[in-house]
Length: 408
Image (cartoon, rainbow, N blue to C red):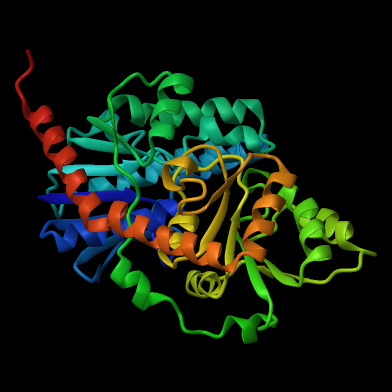
């Protein structure tokens, strides 16, 4: 099968988040199964189509320039930043794919809904398409300070691709159901979770000594928060969590991620000022992916207090490294973590609930080890990238057959 995966996010140049990580693992798994795989990704600056080979995957990068792109950039003056990004990405992907189609023919296209990669493509090109649901803007934008017009317009742009795609997939039952009930996309949706290449994961974790690099105490148990320091990630709970834990336990609490809204300076550090702490707090800022994985590898506990998550790689990778995870009982997290079996679930938006979970793990090393090993087994059994790629190809074949069937 000749498969094209479209995603603005794709490492290393635009490997900003989970969609890029999913596309990377999925592309490699499909190639290992013998398919011809191309990835059309974005770029940080305008560029003509440029192509490289990456371990059996043909990666093409393109970012459009021109009058329309410059006109769309002006939407930022209206504070329509999300809509601006979606429209620019949709137009750039359409132009990039149109050029790519002059060199290659594809049986199927897959693209995420978040980024609106398919908004023009599903309308204008007659190629079978699968739109994969990760984090529809209509569901996550309420957690940010955005203009209502931006929310409505951005959602409408993403909806174009969802409505017109040949088929839909989702990485959790949660987001499939939310898309139906809250977005009104009443179409069949195949749930195929996100996958990991465990052999690659085990070999790829950088052997950098993060204790030395970040100045972390070696003797102390280490708790790591990975993610942007923003409300959707539950950072507003962490001042109370940090104060309670660090006053009573000699542990190291590490926050690794961009602090775009100045949470550390305005909330976290003031909450700890003047307190007598047994433990220590460390703020790393944004880390590269290899260093971030090394940090998770040296963690004893990974803290994920998000208000909304679907099937995050921050959780999957921590589980793959046999780390004990404490996460909120919301979104797609209960599909990944069984409370007390392969991790702990705390009540969403409830700081004391997270404190209680962390306390259990701090004082019970056997529990940490048992949950970590069960988490690793969960990834081995349910999140093998190659196994999930086979499930995706079944959907692709159905989409292709449906697209070419004669109209009734």
